[in-house]
Length: 127
Image (cartoon, rainbow, N blue to C red; front, side, top):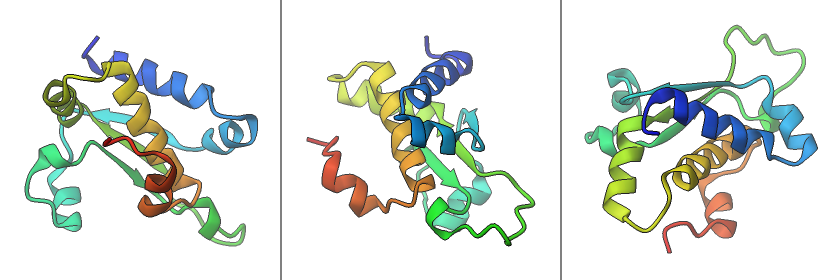
């Protein structure tokens, strides 16, 4: 249950459960699972500890896209398996599938144009 294929299945199920308009908008986003965040991403974000980054939305939010803008690369939601597993073990109070789904939904919320503050206002996950 802790392998990449299982992470993808859980993440895809979370996306499939989105309300119809969001599910439709999510179809163009690639979903990737990597063991650890790549060094260039950590460097660009100023993150020293790779365990601090469980997921990332890499793209242009829908609220900022224009049809006339070229889009040479697809938007991507990254899930970082080892940091998610570390958080799951450290917390000890949440099912792994729930944590994977939470990270997935959080990153897709960025695709839909939500800021971290917007997400935190309705998703008080850390409590």
